[in-house]
Image (cartoon, rainbow, N blue to C red):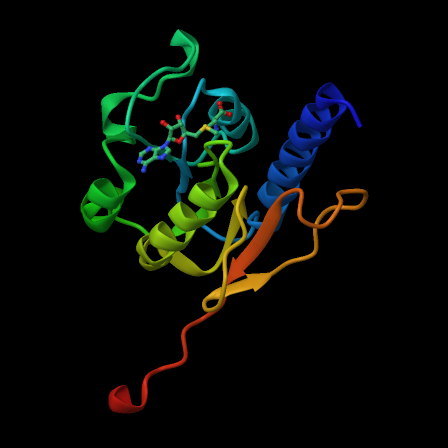
Length: 171
Ligand SMILES: C[S@@+](CC[C@H](N)C(=O)[O-])C[C@H]1O[C@@H](n2cnc3c(N)ncnc32)[C@H](O)[C@@H]1O
């Protein structure tokens, strides 16, 4: 497969999975978050898919197309490890949908970043929230969901945040 074919397949999988995720959360209220503004391609698509939801964006820099830059109230600028831990003070409601698009092109580093930030993302999410991720997420509370028809396993990842069991000490 040529690199062009591979890029087209990756972007098609991303687009179809974001559209599928938007349908999956149709009955779940709450805002959306995206980690990785990049040039704003997926943020722009999310705006069209989720016109009535607040969408909060996280990135260490703004390098997006001028039409695809969120306003200051919806932008968390800085390293994920600095902005995620206190984000709920501004987001104020459990998040229904998260898009993690954080890949750097270096597989091991991207997977390590996903492992590091997943525990910071989870507390922001509502039980039952849907996550589309360019990297695999391991363990609790990430329950894999079937991908849309025709999308090959591993090309993109889809999860639902499972409800946390009450801990023994809380009973
Ligand atoms: C693959 S790009 C996002 C592409 C974007 N979703 C689009 O469609 O144009 C990944 C983005 O994650 C950001 N990023 C990577 N690691 C980060 C970190 N530790 N903290 C904050 N931003 C980070 C990069 O600056 C980059 O803009």
